[in-house]
Image (cartoon, rainbow, N blue to C red):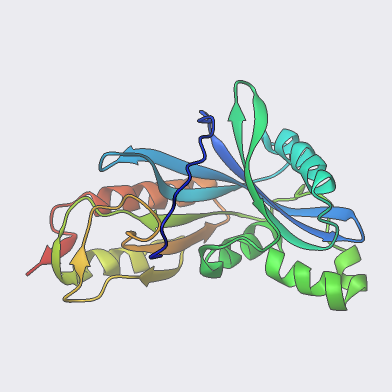
Length: 237
């Protein structure tokens, strides 16, 4: 950002699987609208590259434990109204806060298609209801107990570098033909310098996958992993 830092904050490294608890609060009453499990893996010399996220319901461990913990965090921080997006790791057998923001889940809203299909509602809409339509807000389950379908948000990872000529249309057409395909965004443009993915700024793109059959979503998600590893997926000048 062009700023000069003269101080360093040293924090303990939290080792463990990472989860998200998305909540909307009204007058101190918390409604958790989604719980997600981040798929993070080592890649390109970075130990925690985002590959995607999968939605959980409260009966899938450790969703309930994470939600109960985050509600205590919200109370401690006096976040009483509006949305919150909390990331938590299961560290040494118990939840530990990574961060919480008084905002909706990010990723430019790419998760909304998945949330709507899986839960039947999404954090953005529930936030609006909390402020302007309390009757509708009251109908939303306080916890994500019901699953209407299955889905995943997949982030596409680059393993190479160069000046992009194009993304291989053969693979994009295959992805569009997935049974679970909903939508896809490719962030890279021809002529752009491509770097190996190490963070959210170096993704190739993302896609939303939903289906009533979990096996279909899983198969398509794993096929994405195969495609992005192909030598001819990204074609360079």
